[in-house]
Image 1 (cartoon, rainbow, N blue to C red):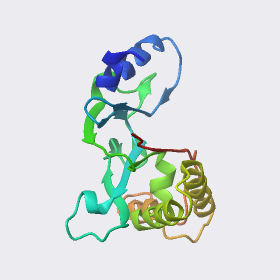
Image 2: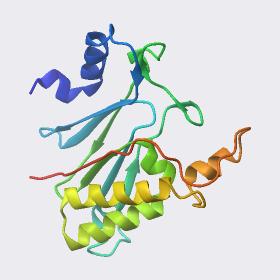
Image 3: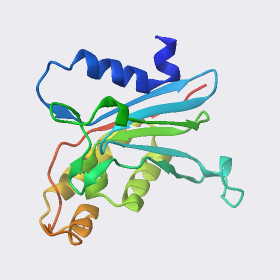
Length: 193
């Protein structure tokens, strides 16, 4: 592990973009690292890939009950407009547009990296419900990732579903109804001692 990249994943994202500069195409990106010395999650991204951080709520809110587990952070998408994310690559944005963020984490926190199809097809409370159920039953990150991806896929092909994407598109000149099929990826990991 290269310390300069774990302290600043934006540098790795910029290095990767430079190394791939002769390849045609473009994509959104998210890189996340855990800085063990600072107990912080550092992440850098371009576009509409989203980081979700779940945690035991009593660590963050005095009013939380012991055992409550919920969403405490969601990264902001980088969009030119709806359905047009920033991207790196051919005719894309320069790596300098990458956001770099840091957030303190504790053992037991759950980090999710999800493609836009998850947050475009599932509302935050749906995501939180799925994560909470699987966190309480198994604490297995693979189970959580699979459950989220499967639910997002089912909703994405439902032409009658009320989705965040459909709701947002009603404010544009190209309204959309139902789910939005697209790539669906979920990466999940718990922070450990």
